[in-house]
Length: 158
Image (tube, one colour):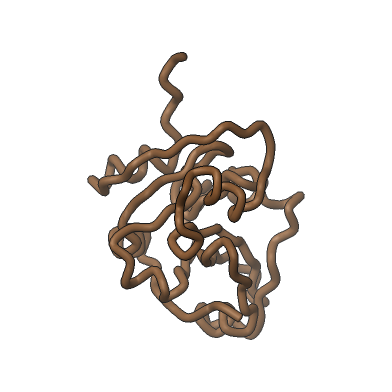
């Protein structure tokens, strides 16, 4: 089997000298993050999903939370100084981010959006996020990611 092509996310990490580990799994279409974590033997508390939302201002934001948790829209809005935020419809995801559902990651998007990572990740030595394609996860340091994308940690869970 030929080596898979690097994703925009991987190229971004390499350009910024952020160490990461690629983990792949067999999948032809979207499966939820809990199933991905279980397939790869990753703890749910260390496996994060990327949610994209639009603020009242019209700006887009990324929120990273553990795959088995739910985003608190009020806390999320407050974390980005918006009156409110609304999750992006799946049909609009690719046009806005360049990624498909199940492959969306906060790095390597068409445009870098303000990103908030739930504060439970701040104490973790590493966590897992989508690698920018269905079937690929990336293991990396949450602190290094947040620093590289000028994001922040905040409590954004229900």
